[in-house]
Image (cartoon, rainbow, N blue to C red):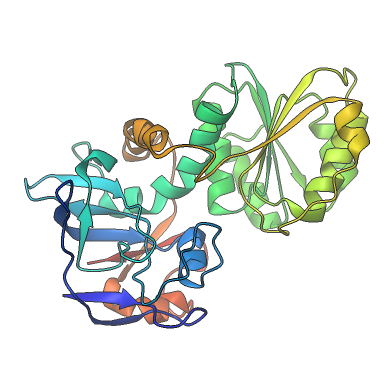
Length: 314
């Protein structure tokens, strides 16, 4: 078979012949139909993700839509760091899969499940998220952030404040459910707009997160009211200087959400709802399909859209 193969961290994968997967007793061999080129996949391929095993060669890809031996089309995730989904075939544990609803578009599901999953699982599994809550999404102009705006509303948020740096994408977020949009560069404005939120979904971390945290806590009228800050991404930096006073003088609670803080069984349990919401259009996904054999060009940004998620299609 052929696969996208990484032989050196930091270099694009190459489409080449690779050994066929050998399923374990709990796995089956699946024909890959579409696999998303997510930021998570790029960090897997350059060895920088916190779950990286540091082993080479590796086939990148953490999830996909595939044709199973019983003929069903399913979305699935893989746990291996080295035998990923950007290949013609992959070994899959069927327990980590969900059958696509009739009429579902495989490319849309492959593009959307990963970014949607990040906020969906955070709200469902990491905090006690109540219908009617007010939410701030930091980094709302990326694929995961724009999905988070929609996920929050779908799961019952009453009011969503969206903040990001891309002015064009920020302006498009009210159509996806954002009630207020605020440029991330205007920290005081973000704090004022989100002064009464119950939850922050944070994809940026770093200094911007620390600055917004300080402004938000200062702007709150009821400082003792609980505020759940969920760190999911770190596009602005791996470290944030959090003043201890922000924790001592407020109801601020900081948690993370991702592999490790949420068990695999919990992720799998949420898959049917996630896939259904994408399949029926409840959560809109911007995706561009590129032939899997063109993975080098897609990786370099030479093919595919400049916005939205690139999906490698068999």
